Length: 335
Image (cartoon, rainbow, N blue to C red; front, side, top):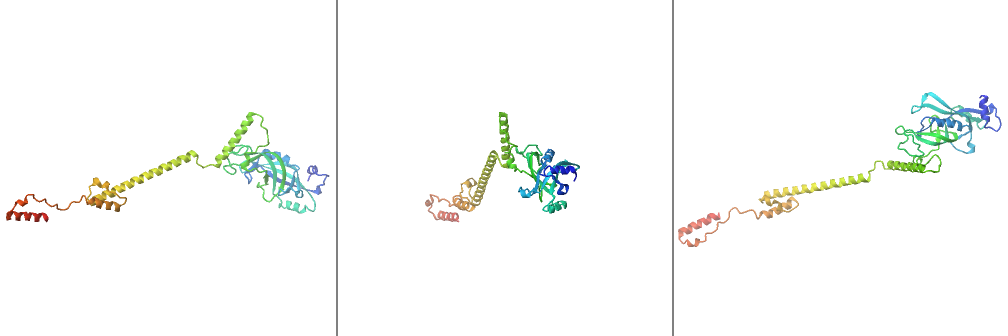
């Protein structure tokens, strides 16, 4: 530890501390790569935090109790690694903090764990005033866009850092290399929150605010009912269904009529009824139609031999020869 580092540390102490009284170590606070929450810091955000983090305390698991205060950052800088790229192909940058711990009996184990790499992962707590969509560039704290984190290359860029609160030793950070705990705002609430309260003083500002609110409401409604049918489309579909049912009913009725006609024609043919009278037969089934045809057939089936009418003057024949001939004729007719 050189004198310049010791001087920076002593800016935060109530009395000057000697080199053997403090333990200094580097901390990988955060970087510009996309983290597990599909968020990342902008390069400008890292530069802002390099100043804001100086003097901030280090605790455990973001528990703000006084007894959890362990270390303090006395210097910070942005480190650029040109040979390393982020997940989306940008030059990798990270925020390096220099922190110190007072050497006491209570801190011996912690210092040993830091040197051994056990206490390594850290997470920072800060407030980002802008949450920018990486696809369309809109600020999602003002308006909601149609893109979703983790889909189609979309992630949120944290920018305009207004404050940092603390950094903590944690087991699993949000960022792979360091860890970031942001002031998280659920997406459904982002659209209704501005960067800060600003009174509307002009008609143009009012119109812009109304336009943003309407666009956000429309976008939310479209997303909510995505894939649903519009009332017009639903009505058209219902009409198409009703028309199809009517067509099916008509075909069924027509088919039934043809079937009845066929059964009547068959019965008429079998029972000897003229075809032009087949439609006069009644019944809905083949048995009913045949029964009615049997009744009809009685009026149209003639006997094999009709009796020959008697000669009105046959009584005039009195001789035996004529009587015998007449009797023979009757027998022939009767046979």
